[in-house]
Image (cartoon, rainbow, N blue to C red):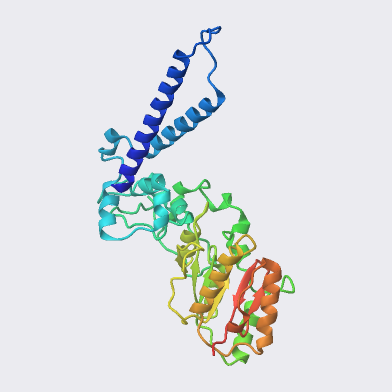
Length: 357
């Protein structure tokens, strides 16, 4: 209400100023005693600039100010969006993208969610509008569901179990095999050395055993289709994978492989309680493009969810890790809180183990 009144007041002031300037210009030309040599004298530059500024302001305010005739229509603001705001708060970033938010909430309650509205979910999350508002519509399902699902995470995934309408590709063959959808290729990942910085899962489990520790539950940040979780499943380790379905069905593929995907963006606080995880892995999403301060918040959030343990050796190892990380990502953080960290960069991923006092 206050925002609308303010816009109306600014619009009124701009219109009054325009009229005053116009009257001033007319009065000065009428009382002039000089003979008029040109029936249409040029307007002074300073007056043109002022008029252009006022005109631009009016146009801007007009775009911000909704049309009263349109404002009263039911199609402007979805009814369920108005209802939901009375029941639960919405992320503050959502108000910066009203068009996408209205598209997402534009549906008929108690019916099937339209494809156009569901397509706005991913762009909203990437713009910080998360968690998304709940909706009272039924999620669409594939027309032909598979008769059975694979129990082996590296078995072929049925394509007819995925709604391809939200993606450009309509089959797995259309997708880039390096994106994690070629399961024959994925079956070989994390099992052997490719570079000196690689840490195969077999060596990781040996480190855990030698340190008399235990590895039971883990989190894979930006894990794509969940290949790391699939490999760790063979070691009886439960791994939850955070992933986004940007341009490809990552969440759907991970779930069809019998893994647990979390539809969580990188900027969100990890949805895990403090000190409950044995291991956190950061996938390709955590790399040089992340601003230094955002990376610090992420790493300290990783530290928050990791439990105390005995994996690690000397405090100097943690210092060395910090120096290597800073040289790669140009970030700094307090070293005193870390005893041991191991950095692995075959796919720009970090395997972090922390010892708590």
